[in-house]
Each structure stands twice: as structure tokens, then as C-alpha cells.
Amino acid sequence: MRWDNLTNDAEAGAPALFAANAVTTRTIDTPEFRGITFHEIRARSIVNRVPGASRMPFEWTVNPYRGCTHACVYCFARKTHSYLDLDTGLGFDSQIVVKVNAPELLRRELASPRWRGDHIAMGTNVDCYQRAEGRYQLMPGILSALAERANPFSILTKGTLILRDLELLRRASRVTDVGVSVSVGFTDRELWRTVEPGTPSPERRLDVVRTLTSHGIPCGVLMAPVIPFLGDSPEQLRATVRAIAESGATSVTPLVLHLRPGAREWFTGWLTEHHPRLLRRYDALYEGGAYAPKWYQRRITGMVHDLAAEYGIGPYEPGAHRNLPAREPEPPAAPEPAQLSLL
Ligand code: SF4
Image (cartoon, rainbow, N blue to C red):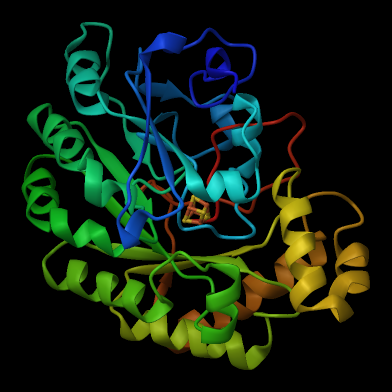
């Protein structure tokens, strides 16, 4: 394992954020965490500048974890585990790096005279409300630090655990701009069970949206990923947009599956096992690289926007919450480690 390669959100080649001897490895023998290994580290910094931020609607991120037990087969962040010489498949799902000093570091960095109080996005690389958060409870300290400085922030998650921090979110929203989005790409239960095996069900995620909005925290939905040939039929799109609208979400933003290196191999293995007849169609659709062709992305976006209008829910408005992509992603010219991971 190359701990000296754990850099500021996985940018290979950047200076290490902690010393190799600062790692404590734990396995916890409870049913909830069986098979999962936690690598506890004391990080050297926590506020991360996004490389190529001009393409993203945020410039700064905080990510207290690396790896994600939500285990979404398509997760783009898988690649980042390879920078530690960790496996990008099952290893990404079960070898979780925990920055145990994240709250105290954040307090310190926000207090620095050099910090300008910019918006901070969370959940942009891996889910900050994954199951590990139930054990390590880093987010309450992080939210408190942000609220104390009235620092604007946003969270993107699939985790129902965010409701544990509802009161903290409400308190923060009284003093600063707080944006919350939940990711729900589809409501098909069979698809959910196999492709997002560690996540709360789509219904439970939409219950989170309902609870947040009813408690005065506006919440949008990132409808991601829309999975070609498995979650993109007109009926599926309609059912998903209708459920999102019924949850009280303030916006819906569709995003088609993209398959970058690391995720692509793992997803293709899953496809081979579960839907082998689709392999050729996927090869054809993604022959240009990590992104589905523009015509396909436009078709899905147009259908979702039409449905959203029909059900009375708006598209995402840039600047409203700042935690959703302001535009469809373009094929990047160079790797961008800290992007939305289709949470
Ligand atoms: S897509 Fe999001 S929730 Fe799923 S494994 Fe990746 S980081 Fe976790």
C-alpha cells in the first residue's frame, strides 16, 4: 500500500498529506462492518482545491473519507483507490480511509487569515454519509465548524444518515447558504439491488428529501446516473421523475452514466455477469470514451426536463445551491480527480 501517495484528494504526484506511520488499521467485527477495513489517518490538510475548477460549479471540497461502502458499481471515484495501490473493485468498497482529524483540521483551516470564506462542496468524491460515518461521526464536527464561520457549503449524498444531522443543518442554514442534494438515478428496485448494493433504497433516499424539505432545508435531486438500456426507458424515466416530484425536491438534474477508467472495468464485469446481452450495445455507445454520445445525453436530458415540467418540478438553477453540476460534463482534456462521483 502506498500511503505516501495519499495526496490531497488523490492527485498523484502531489505531496503526501500524512506520514506513513500515522495510519491505524482496524477491522470491526460487527455485522454492519463485517469485511470492511478502516484505515484511520491523521491528515495534514482537509480543504482541497479542485483541479480544473473552472469546469466545476465549486472550487473547494472537503472529503473526510476515501473509498465508499455504498459500493456503486459505476462509481467514478474507484480510480482514486489505485493511487494508494488499493484495489479499485472490491477494495474500493471495503478498504475505507478515514481522516479522523477532519473536524479539527477544518476548524483550523477556516480560521486561517488566508481563507476567504468560499463555498465548500462535500460528497463530491465519495459519500460523506456512507456507513462509516455512523461509526466515526466526523460530519457533526465539520458542520459545526462551517456554521461557526458562517461558511457556505453543500452536500451531495445517497446516505440516509444525513438526517441524524438535521438540526445542525438547520442551524447552519440560519447563518449561511446551505445546499443539499440527494442522488437518485432510478427507482427500479431490481436495478438498485445489483448496481448500488450498499446504498439505502431509492425510496428511502426520497424520504430523506421529503424530511429535509419539510424541515426547511431545500433539497434537490441529482438524477444520476441514468443507466443506458437498463434505466432509461420512457416508463422508467417517468416513474423516477414522478417519485422525485412527489418527494418535494426543489429541482431535478439528470446525468447520464459515464464510465471512466477504474469504473469502466468494474462496470463491464458487472454487465458481463448480469446483462451479457448488453455488452455489444455498451461497447458501441461508449466507443468514443468515458461519455455517452452527445445525442444520447441530449435525448435523456430533454425527456427528463419535459417530465419535470409536467410534474411541476424545476431543473437545477446554477447558483441556487451550487452543489449540482451546472452543465452536462464534457469529455475532459485531462484527469480531474475531484469531480462528482455520481453519488
Ligand atoms: S457513487 Fe457515491 S455513493 Fe456510490 S460508491 Fe461512489 S461515492 Fe459512494
